[in-house]
Length: 240
Image (tube, rainbow, N blue to C red):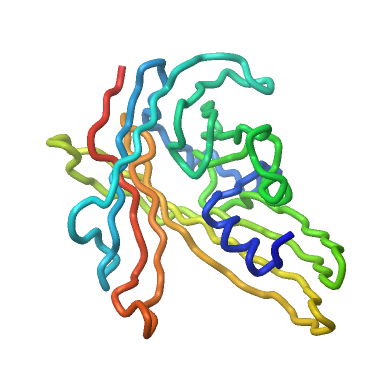
């Protein structure tokens, strides 16, 4: 079992977000945009490093492709299955008037991953909340000389809407952030320390396209002075 501080880094990459009670719901905030889900829809996500202004720089390092391959009822929701990762290991997507939901293919996760992410529908985006709790995951580890107790808590917060040209089309992009807070205590080799850390990731959803980008900021170090983070952004896409 990895230390809780190491688990945090993997949790961020998995983007583990689970459902919670709907709080701060305001009908006046109800958004309306097309989040397209249909068999045959396909998105190609290009991966770039970020410059000091947190903008994509240089050529794409690689491209990931994700296709909707099936429509089914999954865990009580009308769902669409993806053949490859679209958004941090999410294998199923569903949408209703309240939110956009995702679900991991839980049986394929490692034991470590299962300790970090929920086996349930998770709320990826709320149409009628400006800020919402995205997930809360308790950690309890007792292995040899390593003991850890803690909690992952993620909060979603909308940033705003902007207009962006995407492949010759002018579209609205809805931007939001995920703030992942880790708190707890870990003891290793007789040394105990408190964990209190927050990390933020950024996302955009484009009207009539779907998830447009995910972005993570980073900070330069002496060893990597040009390290400012990365962005995964839609290039080509096919919407049925």
